[in-house]
Amino acid sequence: MNQVSARLAALSPSETLAMSQKSNELKAQGIDVINLSVGEPDFTTPDHIKQAAKKAIDDNFSFYSPVPGYPALRNAIVAKLKNENGLDYKPEQIVCSNGAKQSVCNALMCIVGKGDEVIVPAPYWVSYVEMVKLAEGTNVIVTAGIDQDFKITPAQLEAAITPKTKAFILCSPSNPTGSVYTKEELKGLADVLAKYPNVIVLADEIYEHINYIGKHESIAQFDNIRDRVVIINGVSKGYAMTGWRLGWIAAPQWIASACNKLQGQYTSGPSSITQKAAEAAYTGDQSCVAEMRKAFERRKDLVVSLTKEIPGLKVNNPTGAFYVFPECKSFFGKKTPAGETINDAAELAMYLLTEGHVACVGGAAFGAPDCIRMSYATSDEKLVEAFARIKKALADLK
Image 1 (cartoon, rainbow, N blue to C red):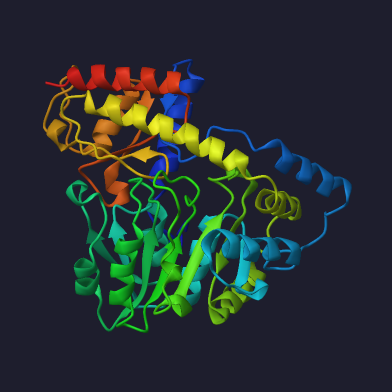
Image 2: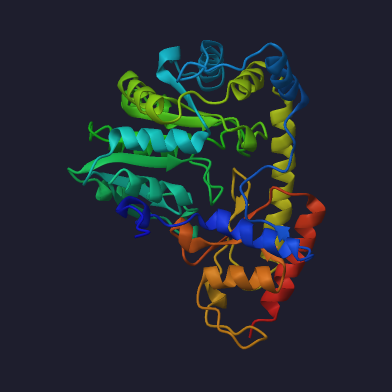
């Protein structure tokens, strides 16, 4: 009678984690695989943050924290939002969770019910659509291709809104495309949303500090929609703290209270030690963030130029995050040296893994079946080698 719930049966497994697992299996067999499938900085957590964690252990921060996080951390986040983003929040509007992934899921579970529609621009991060399913909502996908830099227009957004629309998810800088919405583009979207007061905006800004156009712009800055924007952020990407698991929301009070209530029933507060480390991340020296961003920008320039040298791949110039998302449909229908036909991006990614020993992720999981995601969060040397392998493997397709 091994029957999982209908809720679980409706979920798709994470394609990014699955690809990472397959590459690890090949590595275990002694094969030299270069992994470009995982959205994770290759830097280690800065020393002053690690020191804060060690001190927290010595100072016996080993007890349950308040469900939404320690007041000191929430105050540090309030100060960050004020100083970096010009946004005013109270500590009780901040809820800290076990990673930004939980923060997104908390918010969706608290505001979306059966039959509610959630507008999700595609390409999208793989987990958004699955979380909407968990909340029993309906995904409304709005597609933006490479020719518009993977960014939707105000007209596209307005055309997708119906009386059932409950939420709109915006990820800028974007995973998987690296696209960043400018202030003018965000204002265009905000002006549309201002006409529909029942639509809540989930602004996933986890890649805030990894942008190459200067200052990060948040859609929460616009007064006409500010009172229904939920900012989602955390320390994973900007501070190289993926395994520490600390994300947060800054939200209207009623949503923050709802997330606090929900989290209180199923995980409680995040790790006490991680919270003290995150506090140090936000209150300490920020030069580490700038140094990592510089390295990512150098790698981005390298990878875009290497991708452009590969016939058949079409790539734009991303302005944030650490991904390139080339269009690869020119290879569909071609045959491998073993005589197998490549039908889609997932099969192309599998071919690049098994023959080129480079792990990437097919775009279908991101709502973009003609593209393939490659992370450049690894060393310059590995990137040069990886793209040489990709170029050779693709040239072998006939």
